[in-house]
Image 1 (cartoon, rainbow, N blue to C red):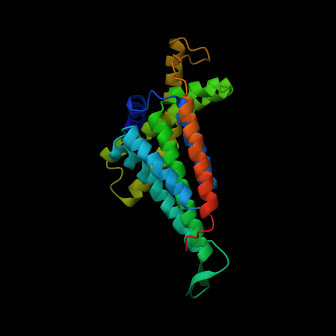
Image 2: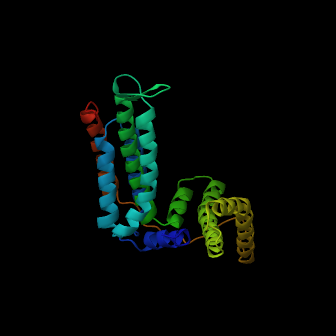
Image 3: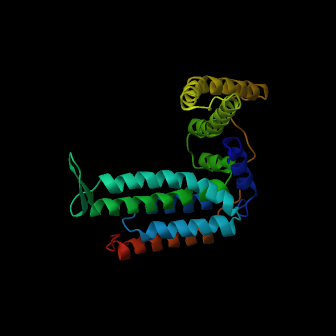
Length: 265
C-alpha cells in the first residue's frame, strides 16, 4: 500500500466502520487496558488471547477488510520477527540449548533467550492488535476530543494532532521524491541508488518543512488562532460495556496467575 494512500485509508475506515458510533472512551478503555496487561504479562497465553479478541473485534464487529488489516500488520510483524530472532540467537543466560564452535569463540544459544524472544514477540503482537483496534475504529478527531475531556493539556493535544498529520505529510513527500527519482533512472544501479537515498535524506526535511509552512498559512487564512475547534458530538459510554471490559481485564489477570508457570520451551 502506498504511503500517500495510508492516511486516507485509515481515516476512511475510522469514520465508516461498524463501531464508529460507539463511545471512544469505551474503545480506548478496552485498547489501553488490554495493551498494558498484554505487555506486562509473563504468560504467553494472555497476549495470545488479547490478539485473538482484538482481531475478532476489528474484523467481525468493526467490519474492517481483512486484506487492509493484514497489510497494516505485516510490516511491523516482519520487523518484530527479525528483532526477536536476534534476541533468541544472541541473548540469554543459564541453561544452554545449543553450542556452536567457531574459530574465534563458542556461540551459545540459551534456553532463556528463546523463551524471551517468543514472549516478547507475543507481547508486542498483542499490543499491536490493541493499537490497530483503536486506530481503525476511532477517528483521530474523536480521540483528541476525548483527551480534551479527560483534561489533558490543550497544547499537548493539538501538538499531537499536528504531529499525527505531519507523519503522513512526511511519508507522502518521501514517496513523491522516490517516484521522481525512479522515473529518472535514479535507482538503475547500486551506486545510483545510494546517491538517490542520500539526496532524499538531504532534501526531505526541507521539502516537508516547506509543506508544513504552506499548511500553516492555509490554516491562518481560515481563521486559526491556536485552537482547533471541532464539533464535539460523541456518544456516551455505556456502563454495561465498561463493566464487560473490566470483567475481561480481570479474566486476563486471573489467566496470568493460572498460566504463568507454563514455559515456552
